[in-house]
Structure formats: C-alpha cells, structure tokens
Image 1: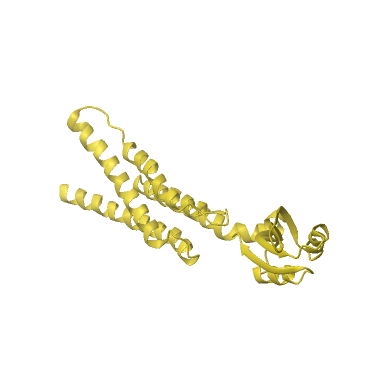
Image 2: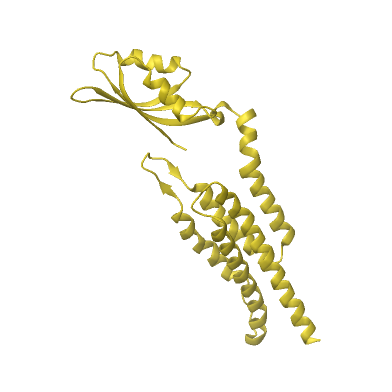
Amino acid sequence: MEDMLEMVVYNDVLLKLSFAAMTGVIIGLERELKGKPLGLKTCLIVSVIACLLTIVSYESAFLYSKEYSRPMDPGRIPSYVISGIGFLGAGVILRRSNEAISGLTTAALVLASAAMGITIGAGFYIEALLGVLFIIFGIKVLPPVFERIGPKKLKEREIKVRLWIEKKVDLTNLLIDIKSKDLGIRGVKVKEETNDILINCIVITKKGIYTTDVYYKVKSLPGVIKAEVESLE
C-alpha cells in the first residue's frame, strides 16, 4: 500500500514538472522567435524550478508539521521565489543609447514563468493552462487587432531623426515641409554648429512605413546636408 502511494506521489510530481516545463517552453518560444534576451531555456528553467520549490514547500509543510506538532506555512518558499525572480527580470530591462526602454515585456514573462510553475506546483492545472492561454492571447493576438481597429496612437511608430541643415535654410519652413510628407514631429532640439545647424527630433509615422522610407523623405528636403534616422522600437 505504501509503495502504491509513493508511486502515485512520484507520478503527480512528474506530471507537475512536465506541465511546468511545457508552459515554460510555450512562453519562452515566443520570446525566442522575437530574438529577445530571455528565451526558451530561461523560461523553462524558471518554470520548472518554481514548480519544484512549490512542491517541496507544500509537501514539507504537511510532513514536518506532524513531526514538530505545529503548523507550517506552505506558501513560504513560493513567496521567496516571486521576490527573487525580480532580480532576473531587472536584468533584461535595458536602457538603450537612443533613450528607449526595452525588455519590460520580457521581464514580465520571467515573472509569468515563475507564476506558472508555482500554480502548477500547487496543483492548479486548469488555472495554469488558462493563464498561459491569456498570456499568449495578450502578446500575440491583441496587438495586431488594436493596430487595425484601435486608437490612432497604437498605429504609429516613432523614429529618432538627426538632420544637418544649411544655415541659410528657414527652419520653420523645414518643419512644415516634414509635416507635409505625412510625418508627425515632436521633441525638436536645434543646435548651431560651425558650418551647419543640427536638428534632433522624433518623427512619428504609421507602423507600416519602413525606417528607410523616412530617411529618403527627410533627406530629400531642401537644405538638408546629411540625415540620420534610428528606429525606437
């Protein structure tokens, strides 16, 4: 009877770890396909370890509470997992040279992988499955839908532009010319240099427009000596 009970326990642990590994693979694969710093292996490890620690926490709470004749907190270890995973998440949040912040979604998915592992380790399989489905729906299905039918802001992208302009050019007319090419503009910074004038600004365009298209548009403006464009995405 005891051998049968142990077999059931081991099968349950194997099922939980397998399910946790599967959810980690699903979440990590999405990041891997986008070339993000956090990929399949990281999410799998986080999910499986979180699941394992949750199993250990719950099993040890019931096992040692009988031995020491006092209640123990089964959620103690999982709570430390959630706290500790923040360090891993912080490591993938980057501030790039163009002042853009990247890695927030990736950091959130580190936390999601840990949460899936804890949920499965506690035995909530259906909840974990629903959680993964909602996560994938939120990062793969909703963004394209909102780009089509959502607010105008969600259909736009920002591009950092630097223009070297001849000193004789009227800068106000130049900005008007940029807007006439179906481009928005904000954050304009003007700097006078020895032989020319440098303009730094953010150009706003539709998401379907390539960065190179913006380059050709601004480079063709009268009085532009040199142009430099950089996508903020």
